[in-house]
Amino acid sequence: MKTQSFAPVKLIASRAINVNRYTSDDSIGEKKNELVPPYRGLFGRIAINLFEKLSRVLWCLEFKGIENLPTEGPFILCPNHESHFDILWIGMGLPQTIRHRLCCFGKQEHFAHPFWSILAKWACAIPIDRDGYARPTLRAGVQTLKSARPLLIHPEGTRTRTGQILPFMRGPAKLALTTGAPLIPVRIIGAYTIYPADRLFPRLFDWKRLKRLKLCVIFGAPIDPYRNYSHDKVLASKQKEVATAHQLTAELQEVVASLANQWGQIPSLEGSANEWGNKTEGLTL
Image 1 (cartoon, one colour):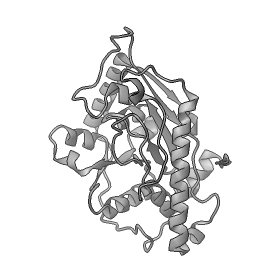
Image 2 (cartoon, rainbow, N blue to C red):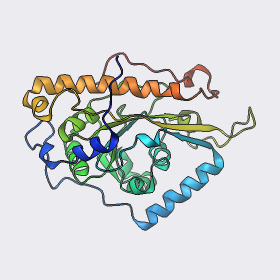
Image 3 (cartoon, rainbow, N blue to C red):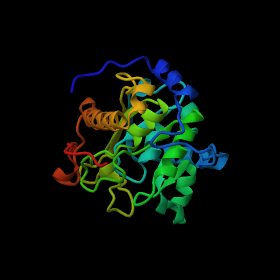
Image 4 (cartoon, rainbow, N blue to C red):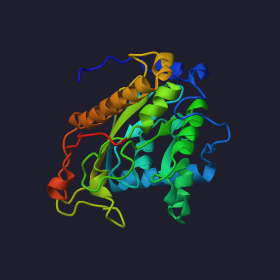
C-alpha cells in the first residue's frame, strides 16, 4: 500500500470536533441517553499513578511517537491487544491533559467481576457485548467523541493467544467515518511476554537473562478518514460507507503491524509464539 500523506495533527483534530459532521440517521446513529463515562475521579487518578510508578520499577518501558497525538479534539486510539493491562500501559504514554479524559471499550463481563469492574471504572470503560448487540456501545462512542474526549478501541476485539495480531474489526473505522475523528494506530510490544492471556499474574522479571522485561508503546501518525472522500459523500451511499470502512480497517491493520519496524525485537520467553509478526488475511466484519 502506498504511503498516505497526513494533514497536520492539530488540523485533523479540530476538524473532527465539528458537530456538523455527526449524523443521526447513519449506520451507527446516536442517542443522547447513551452512557458516557464521567471523568476519572481523584481516587482513580491516584491508583493509575501508583500503577505507573510500579510499572516503571518492575519493567523497562519505552514510548515512541507521542508527537503524533492530536493536541486538541477527539481521536480514536487503535492498539493491538496483548494483555489485560494494555490500556493502562498505553495511557502512561499520554500527556496528563489527555490521559484522564480517555475512555475505552471494555467487554461486558468485566463489569460483573469484583476486581476487573474496579479497573473498568478507573479506565472509564464503556461496556460492549461482544457476542450480541453492539450498537448501543458504538452510539456511546459517538457521544464520547462528540464531547471532545479521546477513545481507545482494540480493533481485534480480544487479546491475542499467540502473540500475533488478529484480524481487525470495522468498529473503529465506522466511528471515524461517522464522527470525523482521526484514527491513531498504536502498537504495543512486550505486553504478551509480560502478561499473556493464559497467565493469572504478570511476569515480573526475565530470570533467564537476569534483566527487566521490556515493553514499548508506539503511536503512529493519524489517519484522516476523509482524506479521499468528504463526509457527506461517504455517508450518502451505504455501499460506499461499507467499502470505505473496509479500506480504512485494512490500512489501519497494516500500519499497526508496520509500527513494529520502528523498534527492535524483544527476546521471546515463549519462542516463536511471541514473534512480532502478524496475520492480515481477511477482516472480521
